[in-house]
Structure formats: C-alpha cells, structure tokens
Image 1 (cartoon, rainbow, N blue to C red):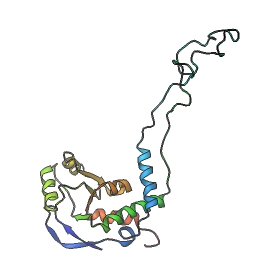
Image 2: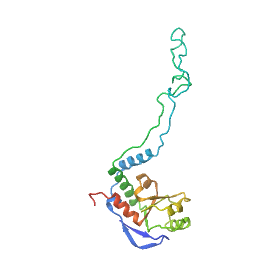
Image 3: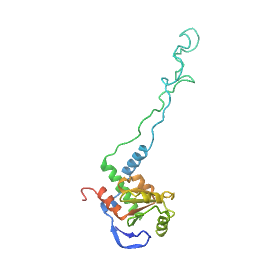
Image 4: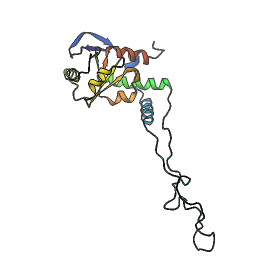
Length: 213
C-alpha cells in the first residue's frame, strides 16, 4: 500500500511511502488486541485502595462480657468485623494490577491495530514536523488542510519533539507520541494516525517480524 506524503502546510509532496504489509497489512488478531489493551489499562490502575481490617482498627482488646450466662452470643474484641465499629473482613488491600505479555504478543497487537488503521484508510503521512518554537496555529492549519479538525488525531513522531508537544497541548483532540512508545490502545483510541515519514520507518523496523525480514 502506498500513501501520499504531505508537507507541513498540508500540500501533497511529490513522493509516496510504501507501507510494509508484514506490519500494516496482516490479518488482525482480535484476541491479542484485547489482551494488550487489558494489559495497558490494568497497568494504569493505582492499586492504592485499602480498608482497615481488625488489626488496624483502634479499640480495646478486652473481652466485652463473660462467655456464658448473659443470654447473648459469645463475643470477644470490640474490633471484630461483626460489630459496627469493627474492621472489615477481606477488604481491598494495596496491590499491583499489572499483567505480563510476551514481546511477540505485544508486537502482534500493535501490528493488528496498525493493520486496522491502514485498512480503514486512517493513516496520513507527513514530512518531519520540526518547529523552531511552539506554534499551535501552524499545527491547526495542517489539520485543516488535511480535513482532520473534527477527528481524534494521534501524531506519531520518529523522535521526541518538545516543541511539537507544546504546540498540541491546547488541542483537545490531538495527542503526540513517539513511535517506539506506541501501544495498541493508543492506536485504536485515535481516529486517524498522522505519522511523520521517518516514524513509518521506525514502526516498520521495530514491528517487522523476523521471518518477513
């Protein structure tokens, strides 16, 4: 598949880029996509929730009343979970929700997500977006020229760019990420991928299967 390369002002350049079918043209694996999205969402959970069990509740440990002869059920500490002011039984404790997937599985998930975008014609290629200083207006002009102002756009860069990131901070529907840091969830969440020309090469190099290479 060949895509037209656009210049920074949104006009077509006189060249195209060819997408590697081993990265952008595979049959998507939906189950692997679900696994990887589940992994990234689980890793974003803080896991700092905590409730007080009986050992953490403040109170006396003396026996409330004698064992027999009161007509009541036997009772010990006031911190018992059976009492209103007692601790909680098996309450949530701090934990990590992270899941682990193999490197090949994560790569397959990203290839599947990119293949979905390529199949849906949701990938645009632009030359290097190098701004000398933050310039939100120039970025908006580019989006308007490509008819992407109403889309949720993910700008994929080959290397980290502080000026481009600052240029997009005030645009609610625009995000900027480095190609090597993309996850399947990031790709699927965006309506359109606006990739730098060199970012396509980075994605191809990182995700191309060794058998295809």
